[in-house]
Amino acid sequence: MPSSPLRPSGGRGLGEVGGRRETQPVPSTTSPFPSLTRRAPSLSPASGGEGVVTALCTLLSLFFFLATPAVAQTKYDTPWGKVATPSRGTAQAIGGYANGCIAGAVALDAEGPGFQVLRRWRNRYWGHPQLIDYLDRLGAAFVARKLKPMLIGDMGQPRGGPMAYGHASHQIGIDVDILFTPGPMAASAREALSDPPSMLTANKQDVDPKRFGATQIAMLKTAAADPLVARIFVNYRIKKYLCLTLPPAEHGWIGRLRPWLGHDEHFHVRLKCPPGSPLCKDQEPIPVGDGCDDSLEEWFRPPPPRDPNAPPPPPPKPKILPPACAAVLTAP
Ligand SMILES: [Zn+2]
Image (cartoon, rainbow, N blue to C red; front, side, top):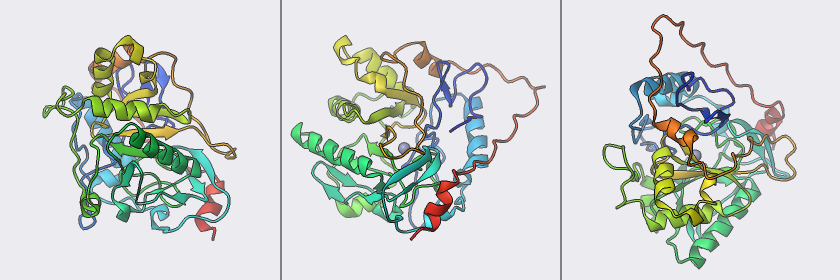
Protein backbone atom coordinates (compact mmCIF):
# COMPACT_ATOMS: atom_id res chain seq x y z
CA MET A 1 0.00 0.00 0.00
CA PRO A 2 1.56 3.25 -0.99
CA SER A 3 0.28 5.07 2.01
CA SER A 4 -1.11 3.13 4.83
CA PRO A 5 -3.60 4.63 7.23
CA LEU A 6 -3.33 1.49 9.26
CA ARG A 7 -0.49 2.21 11.50
CA PRO A 8 -1.30 4.10 14.65
CA SER A 9 1.31 6.77 14.96
CA GLY A 10 4.10 5.55 17.11
CA GLY A 11 2.74 2.07 17.43
CA ARG A 12 2.96 -1.16 15.59
CA GLY A 13 0.89 -1.52 12.53
CA LEU A 14 0.89 -1.96 8.85
CA GLY A 15 2.84 0.05 6.43
CA GLU A 16 5.89 0.63 8.49
CA VAL A 17 8.19 -1.70 10.28
CA GLY A 18 10.90 -0.36 12.44
CA GLY A 19 10.68 3.02 10.87
CA ARG A 20 11.03 1.67 7.36
CA ARG A 21 7.96 1.71 5.26
CA GLU A 22 6.96 -1.67 4.01
CA THR A 23 4.99 -0.13 1.25
CA GLN A 24 2.53 -2.19 -0.67
CA PRO A 25 2.54 -5.40 1.22
CA VAL A 26 -0.54 -7.33 1.34
CA PRO A 27 -2.43 -7.12 4.42
CA SER A 28 -5.34 -9.11 3.23
CA THR A 29 -6.18 -9.04 6.86
CA THR A 30 -4.84 -12.21 6.40
CA SER A 31 -5.74 -14.48 3.87
CA PRO A 32 -5.44 -14.87 0.26
CA PHE A 33 -7.24 -18.01 1.16
CA PRO A 34 -10.27 -16.40 2.70
CA SER A 35 -13.26 -18.56 3.35
CA LEU A 36 -14.58 -17.92 -0.04
CA THR A 37 -16.47 -20.34 -2.15
CA ARG A 38 -17.78 -20.10 -5.63
CA ARG A 39 -21.33 -20.18 -4.38
CA ALA A 40 -20.92 -17.90 -1.42
CA PRO A 41 -18.43 -15.20 -2.16
CA SER A 42 -18.19 -13.77 1.28
CA LEU A 43 -14.94 -13.16 2.98
CA SER A 44 -13.87 -14.22 6.34
CA PRO A 45 -12.21 -10.98 7.42
CA ALA A 46 -9.52 -12.69 9.35
CA SER A 47 -9.46 -16.37 8.94
CA GLY A 48 -6.95 -16.48 11.59
CA GLY A 49 -7.39 -13.59 13.92
CA GLU A 50 -4.14 -12.08 14.83
CA GLY A 51 -3.94 -11.98 18.54
CA VAL A 52 -3.37 -8.34 17.82
CA VAL A 53 -4.82 -5.56 19.84
CA THR A 54 -8.38 -4.62 19.26
CA ALA A 55 -7.56 -1.10 18.27
CA LEU A 56 -5.47 -2.26 15.40
CA CYS A 57 -8.13 -4.67 14.29
CA THR A 58 -10.63 -1.87 14.33
CA LEU A 59 -8.37 0.22 12.18
CA LEU A 60 -7.87 -2.70 9.89
CA SER A 61 -11.57 -3.26 9.57
CA LEU A 62 -12.10 0.39 8.82
CA PHE A 63 -9.39 0.36 6.22
CA PHE A 64 -10.64 -2.70 4.47
CA PHE A 65 -14.17 -1.49 4.59
CA LEU A 66 -13.05 1.69 2.90
CA ALA A 67 -10.41 0.35 0.61
CA THR A 68 -11.49 -3.13 -0.23
CA PRO A 69 -15.19 -3.51 0.20
CA ALA A 70 -14.74 -7.23 -0.31
CA VAL A 71 -14.21 -7.51 3.38
CA ALA A 72 -17.56 -5.91 3.97
CA GLN A 73 -19.14 -9.06 2.56
CA THR A 74 -19.59 -7.61 -0.89
CA LYS A 75 -17.47 -7.96 -3.96
CA TYR A 76 -15.53 -4.93 -4.99
CA ASP A 77 -16.69 -3.98 -8.44
CA THR A 78 -13.64 -3.87 -10.67
CA PRO A 79 -13.40 -4.55 -14.38
CA TRP A 80 -10.04 -6.25 -13.87
CA GLY A 81 -11.61 -9.37 -12.46
CA LYS A 82 -13.96 -9.69 -15.40
CA VAL A 83 -11.34 -9.98 -18.13
CA ALA A 84 -10.78 -13.67 -18.69
CA THR A 85 -7.65 -13.59 -20.83
CA PRO A 86 -4.31 -11.76 -20.83
CA SER A 87 -3.41 -9.08 -23.33
CA ARG A 88 -1.20 -10.20 -26.18
CA GLY A 89 2.35 -9.14 -26.70
CA THR A 90 5.46 -8.72 -24.66
CA ALA A 91 5.09 -9.16 -20.92
CA GLN A 92 5.42 -6.03 -18.86
CA ALA A 93 4.69 -5.36 -15.20
CA ILE A 94 3.29 -1.86 -14.83
CA GLY A 95 3.04 0.17 -11.65
CA GLY A 96 3.36 -0.95 -8.04
CA TYR A 97 2.47 -4.24 -6.39
CA ALA A 98 -0.73 -2.77 -4.98
CA ASN A 99 -1.58 -0.39 -7.80
CA GLY A 100 -0.79 -1.63 -11.28
CA CYS A 101 -1.41 -4.20 -13.97
CA ILE A 102 0.41 -6.59 -16.26
CA ALA A 103 0.52 -6.90 -20.03
CA GLY A 104 1.29 -10.22 -21.70
CA ALA A 105 0.78 -12.38 -18.60
CA VAL A 106 1.33 -16.13 -18.81
CA ALA A 107 -0.64 -18.94 -17.13
CA LEU A 108 0.91 -21.36 -14.68
CA ASP A 109 0.01 -24.98 -15.38
CA ALA A 110 -2.49 -26.62 -13.02
CA GLU A 111 0.30 -28.82 -11.75
CA GLY A 112 3.86 -29.73 -12.53
CA PRO A 113 6.96 -31.15 -10.88
CA GLY A 114 6.91 -30.00 -7.28
CA PHE A 115 3.73 -27.93 -7.39
CA GLN A 116 -0.05 -27.96 -7.64
CA VAL A 117 -2.31 -24.94 -8.09
CA LEU A 118 -5.28 -24.27 -5.82
CA ARG A 119 -8.63 -22.84 -6.92
CA ARG A 120 -8.11 -22.48 -10.60
CA TRP A 121 -11.72 -21.34 -10.79
CA ARG A 122 -10.60 -17.98 -9.45
CA ASN A 123 -8.58 -17.42 -12.63
CA ARG A 124 -5.69 -16.00 -10.64
CA TYR A 125 -2.97 -18.29 -11.91
CA TRP A 126 -1.44 -15.64 -14.18
CA GLY A 127 1.84 -13.86 -13.87
CA HIS A 128 4.85 -12.35 -15.52
CA PRO A 129 6.96 -15.05 -17.25
CA GLN A 130 9.58 -14.38 -14.61
CA LEU A 131 7.12 -15.53 -11.92
CA ILE A 132 6.24 -18.64 -13.92
CA ASP A 133 9.95 -19.41 -14.33
CA TYR A 134 10.50 -18.87 -10.62
CA LEU A 135 7.73 -21.29 -9.69
CA ASP A 136 8.99 -23.87 -12.16
CA ARG A 137 12.47 -23.61 -10.66
CA LEU A 138 11.08 -23.72 -7.15
CA GLY A 139 9.04 -26.83 -7.95
CA ALA A 140 12.15 -28.49 -9.33
CA ALA A 141 14.05 -27.53 -6.18
CA PHE A 142 11.30 -29.06 -4.05
CA VAL A 143 11.60 -32.29 -6.03
CA ALA A 144 15.39 -32.26 -5.72
CA ARG A 145 15.13 -31.80 -1.95
CA LYS A 146 12.46 -34.46 -1.67
CA LEU A 147 9.92 -31.97 -0.38
CA LYS A 148 6.27 -32.68 -1.02
CA PRO A 149 4.72 -30.56 -3.78
CA MET A 150 3.82 -27.02 -2.80
CA LEU A 151 0.23 -25.84 -3.04
CA ILE A 152 0.08 -22.53 -4.87
CA GLY A 153 -2.70 -20.06 -4.14
CA ASP A 154 -3.42 -16.77 -5.80
CA MET A 155 -0.98 -15.20 -8.23
CA GLY A 156 -2.54 -12.50 -10.41
CA GLN A 157 -5.49 -11.95 -12.69
CA PRO A 158 -5.00 -12.28 -16.46
CA ARG A 159 -4.24 -8.57 -16.75
CA GLY A 160 -3.42 -7.98 -13.11
CA GLY A 161 -5.07 -4.95 -11.57
CA PRO A 162 -7.20 -4.66 -8.43
CA MET A 163 -9.04 -7.76 -7.30
CA ALA A 164 -12.66 -8.00 -6.28
CA TYR A 165 -11.73 -9.76 -3.04
CA GLY A 166 -8.83 -11.07 -1.05
CA HIS A 167 -5.79 -8.93 -1.80
CA ALA A 168 -4.53 -5.39 -1.90
CA SER A 169 -1.49 -6.34 -3.94
CA HIS A 170 -0.94 -9.19 -6.44
CA GLN A 171 -1.61 -6.60 -9.14
CA ILE A 172 1.44 -6.75 -11.43
CA GLY A 173 2.06 -10.45 -11.86
CA ILE A 174 5.04 -10.97 -9.56
CA ASP A 175 3.35 -11.97 -6.27
CA VAL A 176 2.37 -15.49 -5.29
CA ASP A 177 0.92 -17.18 -2.20
CA ILE A 178 2.10 -20.63 -1.18
CA LEU A 179 0.45 -22.75 1.50
CA PHE A 180 2.55 -23.81 4.48
CA THR A 181 0.75 -27.14 4.33
CA PRO A 182 2.25 -29.18 1.51
CA GLY A 183 0.44 -31.33 -1.01
CA PRO A 184 -0.27 -33.47 -2.78
CA MET A 185 -3.96 -32.74 -2.85
CA ALA A 186 -6.62 -34.17 -5.16
CA ALA A 187 -7.77 -31.81 -7.89
CA SER A 188 -11.33 -31.63 -6.54
CA ALA A 189 -10.07 -30.79 -3.05
CA ARG A 190 -7.77 -28.13 -4.48
CA GLU A 191 -10.72 -26.44 -6.11
CA ALA A 192 -12.91 -26.64 -3.01
CA LEU A 193 -10.33 -25.60 -0.43
CA SER A 194 -11.73 -22.94 1.87
CA ASP A 195 -9.94 -22.93 5.18
CA PRO A 196 -6.32 -24.05 5.15
CA PRO A 197 -4.79 -24.79 8.53
CA SER A 198 -2.96 -22.11 10.44
CA MET A 199 0.56 -22.68 11.70
CA LEU A 200 -0.36 -20.94 14.96
CA THR A 201 -1.94 -22.34 18.09
CA ALA A 202 -5.70 -22.04 18.51
CA ASN A 203 -5.39 -18.81 20.46
CA LYS A 204 -3.07 -17.41 17.77
CA GLN A 205 -0.47 -16.41 20.32
CA ASP A 206 2.26 -18.87 19.37
CA VAL A 207 3.58 -20.93 16.54
CA ASP A 208 2.35 -24.51 16.85
CA PRO A 209 5.46 -26.70 16.52
CA LYS A 210 3.27 -29.66 15.64
CA ARG A 211 2.25 -27.85 12.48
CA PHE A 212 5.20 -25.62 11.73
CA GLY A 213 8.40 -27.63 11.61
CA ALA A 214 11.32 -28.74 9.47
CA THR A 215 9.16 -29.06 6.34
CA GLN A 216 7.88 -25.50 6.55
CA ILE A 217 11.35 -24.13 7.30
CA ALA A 218 12.76 -26.02 4.31
CA MET A 219 9.97 -24.63 2.12
CA LEU A 220 10.72 -21.06 3.21
CA LYS A 221 14.45 -21.46 2.86
CA THR A 222 14.12 -22.92 -0.61
CA ALA A 223 11.70 -20.20 -1.70
CA ALA A 224 13.93 -17.44 -0.31
CA ALA A 225 17.08 -18.73 -1.98
CA ASP A 226 16.24 -17.47 -5.45
CA PRO A 227 17.95 -14.15 -6.24
CA LEU A 228 14.78 -12.88 -7.92
CA VAL A 229 12.95 -12.81 -4.59
CA ALA A 230 12.50 -9.33 -3.15
CA ARG A 231 10.84 -10.42 0.09
CA ILE A 232 8.56 -13.04 1.61
CA PHE A 233 5.75 -12.09 3.99
CA VAL A 234 5.07 -14.35 6.95
CA ASN A 235 3.12 -13.89 10.15
CA TYR A 236 5.18 -11.90 12.64
CA ARG A 237 4.92 -14.71 15.17
CA ILE A 238 6.41 -17.11 12.66
CA LYS A 239 9.25 -14.68 12.02
CA LYS A 240 9.90 -14.42 15.74
CA TYR A 241 9.80 -18.20 16.11
CA LEU A 242 12.46 -18.57 13.43
CA CYS A 243 14.59 -15.86 15.01
CA LEU A 244 14.51 -17.72 18.31
CA THR A 245 14.87 -21.30 17.11
CA LEU A 246 17.23 -21.23 14.12
CA PRO A 247 20.97 -21.36 14.77
CA PRO A 248 23.06 -18.32 13.81
CA ALA A 249 24.25 -20.04 10.64
CA GLU A 250 20.66 -19.99 9.35
CA HIS A 251 20.09 -16.31 9.94
CA GLY A 252 21.46 -15.25 6.58
CA TRP A 253 18.30 -16.04 4.66
CA ILE A 254 15.63 -15.14 7.17
CA GLY A 255 16.22 -11.44 6.59
CA ARG A 256 14.11 -11.91 3.48
CA LEU A 257 11.18 -12.96 5.62
CA ARG A 258 9.19 -9.88 6.51
CA PRO A 259 6.79 -9.87 9.46
CA TRP A 260 3.17 -9.17 8.72
CA LEU A 261 -0.36 -9.77 9.94
CA GLY A 262 -2.15 -12.91 8.75
CA HIS A 263 0.11 -15.07 6.63
CA ASP A 264 -0.09 -17.89 9.16
CA GLU A 265 -1.42 -20.50 6.75
CA HIS A 266 0.51 -19.35 3.71
CA PHE A 267 3.52 -17.27 2.86
CA HIS A 268 3.62 -14.63 0.17
CA VAL A 269 6.57 -14.43 -2.20
CA ARG A 270 7.20 -11.13 -3.97
CA LEU A 271 9.70 -10.94 -6.79
CA LYS A 272 11.75 -7.96 -7.84
CA CYS A 273 10.62 -5.97 -10.86
CA PRO A 274 11.53 -7.96 -13.97
CA PRO A 275 13.88 -6.62 -16.64
CA GLY A 276 12.06 -4.99 -19.53
CA SER A 277 9.40 -3.45 -17.30
CA PRO A 278 10.49 0.18 -16.99
CA LEU A 279 7.15 1.19 -15.48
CA CYS A 280 7.36 -1.40 -12.70
CA LYS A 281 7.96 0.14 -9.29
CA ASP A 282 10.10 -1.85 -6.89
CA GLN A 283 9.73 -1.46 -3.18
CA GLU A 284 12.73 -0.21 -1.31
CA PRO A 285 15.19 -3.00 -0.54
CA ILE A 286 14.75 -4.88 2.69
CA PRO A 287 16.98 -3.74 5.57
CA VAL A 288 20.36 -5.37 6.02
CA GLY A 289 20.45 -8.12 8.64
CA ASP A 290 18.19 -10.90 9.81
CA GLY A 291 15.36 -8.64 10.97
CA CYS A 292 15.37 -10.24 14.43
CA ASP A 293 15.59 -6.87 16.08
CA ASP A 294 13.49 -4.13 17.55
CA SER A 295 11.63 -3.71 14.29
CA LEU A 296 10.22 -7.18 14.92
CA GLU A 297 9.51 -6.55 18.59
CA GLU A 298 7.46 -3.58 17.53
CA TRP A 299 4.82 -5.98 16.25
CA PHE A 300 4.28 -7.33 19.73
CA ARG A 301 3.77 -4.01 21.48
CA PRO A 302 0.31 -2.59 21.94
CA PRO A 303 -0.30 0.66 20.14
CA PRO A 304 -0.61 3.77 22.27
CA PRO A 305 -4.15 4.56 23.39
CA ARG A 306 -6.00 6.72 20.97
CA ASP A 307 -6.73 10.25 22.03
CA PRO A 308 -10.53 10.40 22.28
CA ASN A 309 -10.40 14.06 21.31
CA ALA A 310 -8.32 13.50 18.21
CA PRO A 311 -10.14 14.02 14.93
CA PRO A 312 -10.85 10.85 12.97
CA PRO A 313 -8.19 9.97 10.43
CA PRO A 314 -8.95 11.13 6.92
CA PRO A 315 -10.29 8.46 4.58
CA PRO A 316 -7.66 6.92 2.32
CA LYS A 317 -7.27 8.57 -1.04
CA PRO A 318 -8.61 6.53 -3.94
CA LYS A 319 -5.88 4.90 -5.94
CA ILE A 320 -5.36 5.89 -9.53
CA LEU A 321 -3.86 3.21 -11.74
CA PRO A 322 -0.91 4.10 -13.96
CA PRO A 323 -2.18 5.56 -17.25
CA ALA A 324 -0.61 2.69 -19.22
CA CYS A 325 -3.01 0.26 -17.56
CA ALA A 326 -6.00 1.70 -19.43
CA ALA A 327 -4.59 0.33 -22.68
CA VAL A 328 -3.81 -3.02 -21.05
CA LEU A 329 -7.39 -3.44 -19.91
CA THR A 330 -8.84 -2.91 -23.38
CA ALA A 331 -6.08 -4.46 -25.49
CA PRO A 332 -6.81 -7.53 -27.63
ZN1 LIG B 1 -0.38 -12.76 -1.06
